Length: 467
Image (cartoon, rainbow, N blue to C red; front, side, top):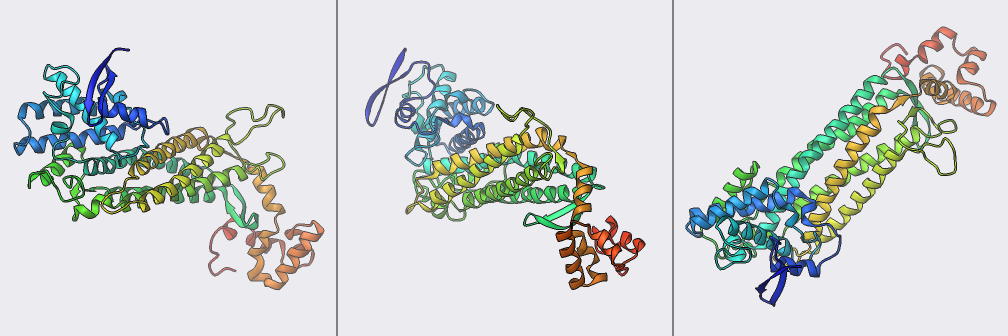
């Protein structure tokens, strides 16, 4: 392989001749091979980090801290990368020591070499335009990296919010479709009182839809950034007007209403907003997993379980049992939920592990936040398209369960009294007779009144004054 030699604090090192990154990125490649997931796996993070670099170049240009020719070359390089060019050169593993320094330098080096090309120079000719002196001017990893994370999480939240919205709409549509299918509700896996299958799916829709607003609210907290604080929040090596200029330019470039943190020293070490955001992802994962548990229960059997809905068959379910079809889509979503829940614990521990003026564990936070959103987005899309939209009601089974249930006795309590209703329920359970049959046999109610009290209208909503 053809190489070029670059030099840093630790000495010389060969770098692939055609690589747009440089020596510090190469050292990170050699040192960190943890997840096998490079920065490029999350394009939103690449875009966010490069937007920070562009905003810094613009502010430095305005303040005379960077020659216009260099600034324009850096800005043009950033525009190319923001548009999707050279993302494959962002090669460093997401999990790394150094509080994100390797990620920051990967960006600095790619931008520098691309800018060098635009100026008519070769890769690695850093005496013409330097990754640290020029691309990283007025910055530290400790403000550029967290600011990029704030942006990347916001960018990644937008498509997640959209797929959750789509899933909610599909559940709402099923709620309308199943609005006339009366079935037995259950608590603690025991018969409770009647409801409609539509009410069950409407509840799913409301439950998941609540977190769309929560994600949006949490994203707004990430609009407060520490850009301009450099190493620990004091702003060392920056012009007095750099911070405001850089943040304003970044807001313009990103389209997000970014503002400077009120205390940059505090903001440089605080991971609170990320912990909160991760908690919302966990909350949504818990809800999503619970719904998938319910879908698997409702479709169980199909003949010896509840069997009240039919999930669309996706693939044969057994290598030995002919005709078996498993609820593979909800199962896959359940596993996604478990991973997101576990990731939230990792974020929590990493945030708590911060020491003094910096949190060196932020790369773990970044990895888990972005990975959780990516997994949840894919899981929601899969669940929507390959399961929810194809669900059918087993109306006959729902009716059989309702007719055979002892739970409908609850609707007769206002007429029979709790003690008498308990006696009928116990007798039905022991004899195998239905509640209806026993009430009629004992002459407790006539057929007309019994039909009225056990009608869907009476059992599915408050009864008013007619009991």
